[in-house]
Image (tube, rainbow, N blue to C red; front, side, top):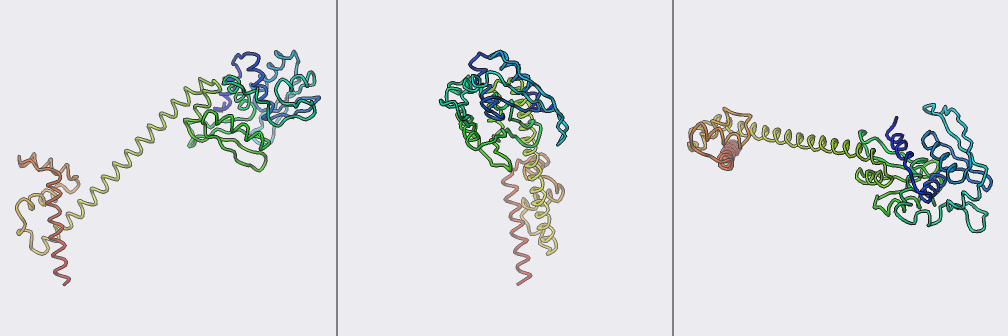
Length: 313
């Protein structure tokens, strides 16, 4: 079962008030249905969504919907559930805010009363997700929540409802219809809280935290590796300077303290400056700081470059 399917299974079991059921059903039918004055037809691949629609219409309007099951051979050969309602249709779509005052044209978006408070917005968004939403499992490489919408007007309406929660939802045109999507992991987790998918929230947060910890560890390891490589490159260059000084028979001309650091650099070519300072301090019983070691190594560099310049001139 996919992560999205698990979420839909969880939220389809929620018990709501009558007015919340109406908002949820409005979200379902506005997102994906064929509405006519004489019939309502909804199609879904999710059995929990199909059962939820059947239950709400039965409980609220005492209407038994017909459910047809068909095979979908396009992709994964999932079963398609088709729910049809042919009784009390006008009453249902009027309650759901999906018909105008004249009772002629089906509205593209529901009336404002459907999302009038936080609980109704939550129910409405839950319905939209049940029938047209999906969320990537947080274990995957990217965070993504999306709704597939038929019309631009409703896509913009859904985006605006989502953004009352500061979810940074956006609309993207597709070859067929529109996609309303949210990308940020924290925003997606907020959405799951809004629709009361609390088990999904706990799973999502656990995986998200684990991924962020792994990413942090990777960044730390990368930084450490970069520092090691940088330190090695510097050490190799310092050894090169020492060899140049020896080549020109100038090594014995070095100050004893500088020569001491040069000897230890040759003896410990893989040590960082701070490691080198500790080694010298322990072995000579004279404390020497990292900056002091670095200062003396710079003197080696200056002398080596002068010797090279003298030869070239």
